[in-house]
Image (cartoon, rainbow, N blue to C red; front, side, top):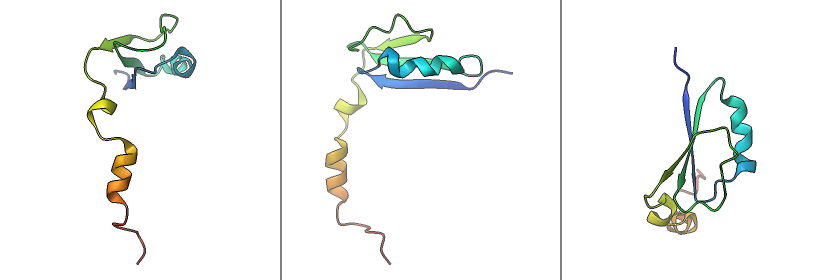
Length: 80
């Protein structure tokens, strides 16, 4: 039986101190990390496979959370 797969999409801010706890799950899950080619931190000390991508990170291709929230303001207040 294969292990469930977990892929951590961290963009360009992946760092070893946030990812280190995920190493503890490696015996039960197939854990990997996907980062952009412009990641700011060295991940060489991790015991997890790290894959770099040259694609545009989703945050730069999509509207910001603030813009999405402001476009929904006033609709569907949830009160009945």
